[in-house]
Image (cartoon, rainbow, N blue to C red; front, top):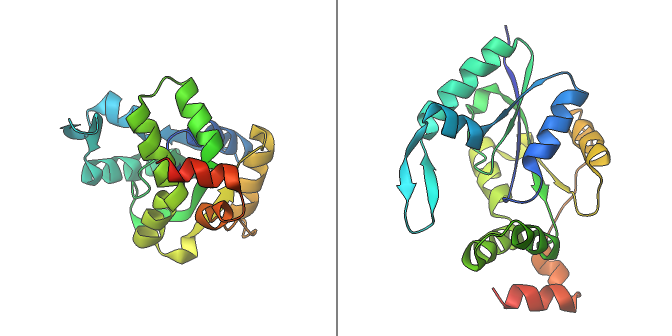
Length: 191
């Protein structure tokens, strides 16, 4: 059976797991949250002490995602802040969630994240790091981005579904927006 994998990625706090679950339900697919999978199945190489994060064993994760896609017998929606968690040849689409850095900062602070991790992730979003990583690994043809700022879960999931079917996504450039948005410019300058 053909494997059909859809990767939902983005900076931590953009809503990947929530939206991947909603999308999976909408298209009658299975969902796998990679951080939970790594934790449950011990698919890490250890801990990066400086960043306080697990080092994902991508080789083992990719094999496991492939196995789960085979078992799913249809579509598998995968959520992960690390975009390159599946074999290129098995991925139909990579959906990169984007979120206004101000909202991302609010969300991460509300979750009690340390100030340094908040700054790191807000800067990552402002620079489009997840998008860049996804394009580098999968190629532009499979990658689409969606600005989820202000969208309810159902609406965001509908738009993601549209992207899978070839719809147009967003084109997000927070640095250019900061040139005309003083509040955003101040936030980005503080990083």
